[in-house]
Image (cartoon, rainbow, N blue to C red; front, top):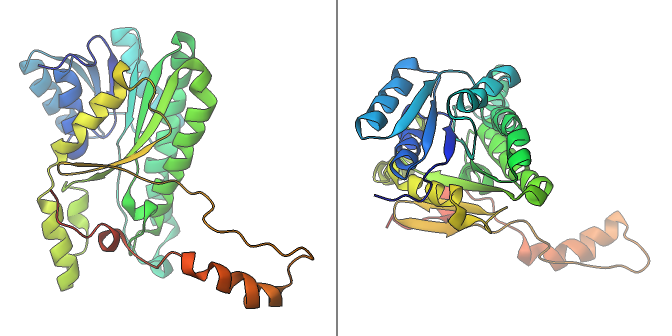
Length: 295
């Protein structure tokens, strides 16, 4: 049995099933004491029972990540029971898929509140403890729906790209305290992804591929990122797809054009855009960019 995070205390949000459950089980198996957070009391307690039956230590928590006060309760549960916090895994999520021109304000807000605001609230609640002890690791879940693109997920995509920016800012602001922050874009079939549309032949083929990708495959990278072995790994974006681990690029200038006299709109149309056009990115979705079968 791995002891990679022995003695550490971890909070895993959205840990009642799917990816979060796999992460909570793996952290506990690797020696961590785990706060299993999920708004479903039955689901969180079932995961805790599974951990304790295997000889691990865990406690259930049902507070929502979507408000600052309740998010603070999640971290406080770790402090009250275990006396410290070492690892935050921001995994809680929801979906309210709708084409952009039909999306309601409520559908937009509900997803941002859980994914982006929730990641901030839980991370912020742990920050004073990380700062005081001069150590800590954040692992946030992003998505290729934001990194690359997908239909009908403006809310989810925006939140997941926001998490990338949040993670980078945390890494920069808290590096002086030896605190790390990284993102993972997970590919896995879970109860949340089961709502992905499967109407067209292409969509059905994509869902069949997703169903082959086990949720538990994400956990080993999370355990590693939470361990001292990853002390120099921060501000990165990873993806896990079955047995593949990918490192994602981050936005950097790819082309530059210069006009010594300054640009006019006409010059931009005639000179600048034609010069840069070959470096434009296509309007693509995640399955079109990562189109090979899971390994």
